[in-house]
Image (cartoon, rainbow, N blue to C red; front, side, top):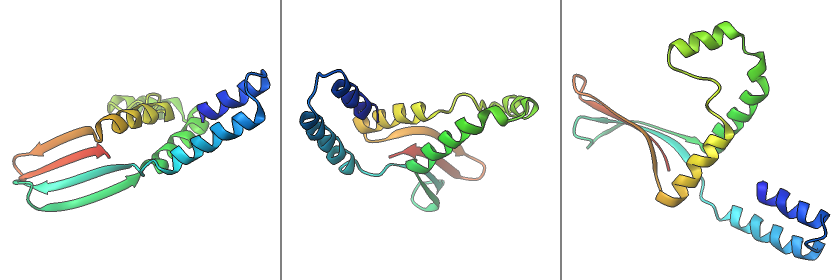
Length: 132
């Protein structure tokens, strides 16, 4: 999205011809179609990680849409609700579409971005939350 805007600004300033811009925009579009789908994944395993008990895959596009919608309605959230969420360690101000883009950049470099790994020794289960 930012690349497209930059290209259009360069055309407006006369630094690129419309034909050059068209080639660049086509290359960007082709790059986007080759980007693999990314998912937020949650996995719950038994003690030895040899049996998958729960599998949840949420497309990143859904998360991005949710953060954009949240940004629109952020000003409508009552302050007392924000305070209650903050008391639980959840900041509604921190999670942004830009944050997701940053994480996806890291995923592109490393292939996997681990958000959390938790083991419950009593229950004999482990939970892994990651983006891939």
